[in-house]
Amino acid sequence: MSDLQAEISRRRTFAIISHPDAGKTTLTERLLRAGGAIQLAGNVRAKGERRRTRSDWMSIERERGISVVTSVMTFEYGGCVFNLLDTPGHEDFSEDTYRTLTAVDSAVMVIDAAKGIEDRTRKLFEICRLRDIPILTFINKMDREAQDPFALLDEVSSALALDTAPATWPVGRAATFAGTYDLRERRLRVAEELPQSDPRMVALGEELELVQAALPEFDKESFDAGHLTPVFFGSAMREIGVTDLLDALVSFGPPPRAQETDTRTVHADEQAMTALVFKIQANMDPNHRDRMAFARICSGRLQRGMRLRHVRTEKQFALHTPQFFFARDRQLAEEAFAGDVVGIPNHGTLRIGDTLTDGESLRFTGVPHFAPEILRRVRLDDAMKAKKLRQALHELAEEGVVQLFRPQDGSPAIVGVVGTLQLDVLQARLAAEYGVAIGFEAVPYSLARWIEGEKNAVAGFAASNRSAMADDLDGDPVFLAGSAFMMRRAAEMNTGLSFRDTKQIG
Ligand code: G4P
Image 1 (cartoon, helix red, strand yellow):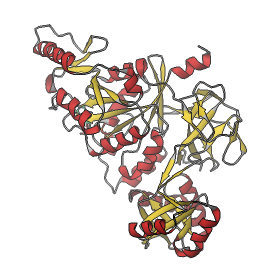
Image 2 (tube, protein in one colour; image 1 turned 90 degrees about the vertical axis):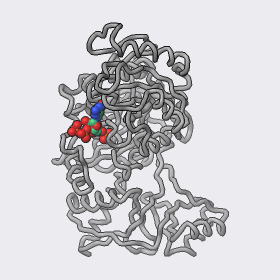
Image 3 (cartoon, helix red, strand yellow; image 1 turned 180 degrees about the vertical axis):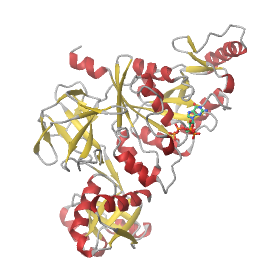
Image 4 (cartoon, helix red, strand yellow; image 1 turned 90 degrees about the horizontal axis):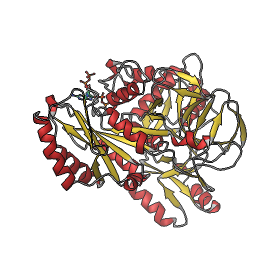
């Protein structure tokens, strides 16, 4: 194995998905601590941020905007380099989450042992399934009253139509939860030794017989294909089961996978460097108005000082200050390998979906925009600021805060979002960062669809529907319809055109 291959094969890039309150933050803290990335658990997020309400969300976002912990955390454990990507907790930011999940090789699904599969777990799981992302399941809060482990396994498989294989088994329950038994390694992991006569050990012996008789064994191939999830039991809070999970990621967690582009499949261990920008975050540093583009290296080795090809604009891009992010600080990345995620400071050159290479012209696919579910017109309070607003909306749309549609009839801009919280963020950021006060007005449209088809046909359609046509950020035509009925009618009457609810970026 070459040095390059060896480096790449020890990368583990993953995200944690869960319903709010299942324990994602606590588990993140414990994972970072196990990896030596933080001294004391509890540093990832201030306590007060826990109980987040809608009203205090904005200030939290501002606080977070200048923190470095939100997007990616890199740490080492067991000879592997882990990149843990954070996904926003609130469902209004689902587009962001979706894009983040395009940049991982596996996901850890955290489930509350008392509540089982919840709404948001299911939705996030479906996103992972679309991309066949291998999933490890962590059943958390076993130190409390919980459902029976057999019932939990059964629930995961039936609710998600996903095969399950227990990787560990809980020793004791609730207040007497003492540790885990590793079914693959046949090893106990308990804080203090338990005599064989301990009721928990007696129960374990009986349960293991049942497990062996009734439950499937772990199958690596099905796991890699995203059809089977190994299940771990634990308590993030009491730090039980956390190293089981990390050890499993080390031993069988998927290394960086191959990725599709418009021209060919790119394999992680190719010499040539390629990278994909999947997230933009502003205000990382309050003293500089720079934006951080988060790029996943898809193949090869990235070196500081490289001249990169920015495929969308066909310009050269000098990579002066790529950065790694740790739990509490960041560091210049002298080199990074496929699977790693680096931050690239820039002043608006880089956009979500952009491909960077060391020369080849190709574009990664599979980072979509989703048609927004809520459309609003932006009302400017001070007409003198029209130009500023225009630029600000453009920048914030590039960052992925909202989608921007410019009506072809010249009327004020329309913004589209998946969740209304995005509108609050837009309004607050326009005020705070650009000094522009805005409001929102209802529009007579409820749906936006990208139009694709032969050039003249698109132009003809646009000419006869001018008041319902807009251009998106890239200048691509979008049809705004008042209702699903009108959208269907437009599609029926224009069979040569496609009305799409997603658009590939890149
Ligand atoms: P989230 O990011 O998924 O929303 O969950 P988070 O880690 O914030 O955990 C939600 C609550 O569940 C927290 O309690 C946390 O302490 C608790 N918790 C997490 N893991 C475990 C566990 O293994 N066992 C038990 N018993 N509780 C756990 P909180 O009261 O909301 O916050 P705090 O006062 O503890 O900070």
